Image 1 (tube, rainbow, N blue to C red):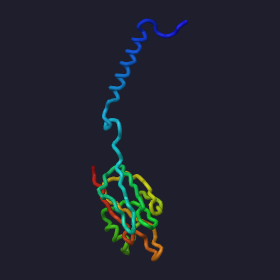
Image 2 (image 1 turned 60 degrees about the vertical axis):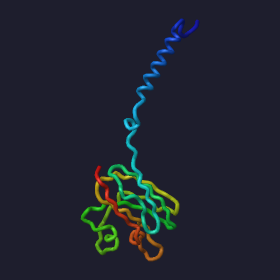
Image 3 (image 1 turned 45 degrees about the vertical axis):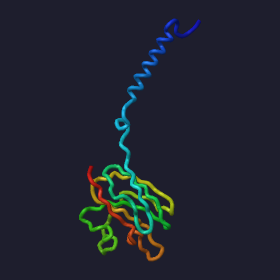
Image 4 (image 1 turned 180 degrees about the horizontal axis):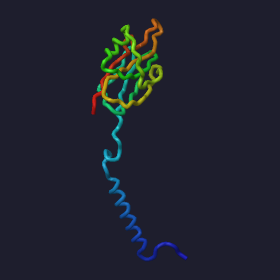
Length: 156
């Protein structure tokens, strides 16, 4: 006993298959913007003695920070929220007034050439980025030596 189609059935089956493929193909022809979520912005941060280099125009929402140690010392980056009533981060680091600040995120210490990545969900406001490593000579943090920076996140 033979299985399968007889007569014109194989041709009809091929036509139905071709029609089904055409319908599937046309339903898949949507723009990438309709299907994929928007890409997450990436902030590239270069860490070197004693500064951060990065584009300070940072949007609100989910943002990825990728920090690369381009210096010759061990460095790390930690991000803190900065209430508007606080003085600039440089004044806070060098001043006599103390303020407890809770970090949002950061990376562990990175050797020269290494990198670390973290993501934050940023709301509009003021933020500080500092290196918390301590210098071998003098017991000062890299942040006090100038490795501190502020940025402001704008609304959408």
